[in-house]
Image 1 (cartoon, rainbow, N blue to C red):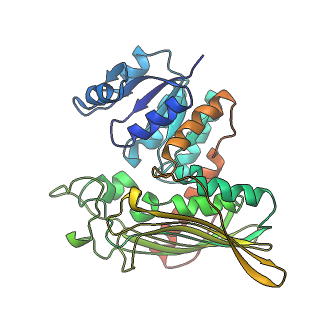
Image 2 (tube, rainbow, N blue to C red):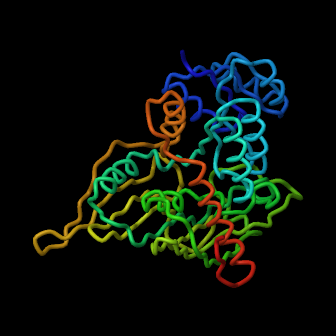
Image 3 (cartoon, helix red, strand yellow):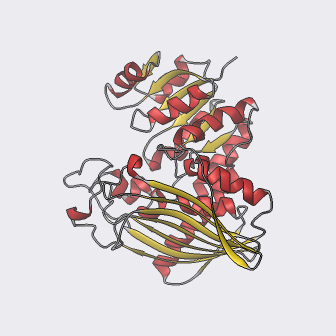
Length: 361
């Protein structure tokens, strides 16, 4: 029997959730979105039998649902995840896991009480480069990863002005909480150690300069709020002794958009990278995956060739959720990892506000 799934949110990410669920053999039964007509339009476009303009109606009228994905603005990730878990559904939520670590803990508690799985769309873990690198790490090639550098930087990438992306109340933050993927990927490679201390700074330059608007996102909202950071820099120490530096930005004076994790192990180093052309579109990006080793007295750089993946692992990540439910695969992420990631993000914001390092309890 295939997993019966529903989708909350009729936005652009629906196409990837739907494709991934179907790739893994799930049956998408319904889509819900409160915007008038949005769910019906998406249902017709993506061949989904039922559409609803409220989550309550979908849960009530589709009792056969076993799993639900959540694709909505950040503020609603936690309440909808908890609502669906309490209704007895497994949950696959878009990133960030919630607005902060305390909210993630609420989701974990609800999942444990319901006896259901909850996973998050950290889709860059599903990229072929990431999975290839992880096999080397798990195989002992790199040894212990002592340090890593996580970077997602954009020159002109503010996702609209005045919309929910730039409103702290709705998004929880700006560039850092939006582009958290490389911080997550670095911690994934490092074995997801428990954070100890965080030092960070945020910047809000260019928040009123339309020249720094990105080629994607949502339309500007006249009279809307733009009160989040456009860049964040930080340093994390872990209880294991490992360290991580991070640089994340929507708008920063750099040459080009760069998405990368570089790490240094005691046997080998490595890099997973995506470089974008000026248009910032996935199909123009250049991906690379490399290992750095010492062999026979020489510095050797190995290039790892993997299949192209224009969707940055989004389809594979959704498919992994279904495969994890059916026992066909191990989950790419766990709620406990999401909690540690949000502790780091909370720590960066707290440190930036206080001007001091922050200890993670």
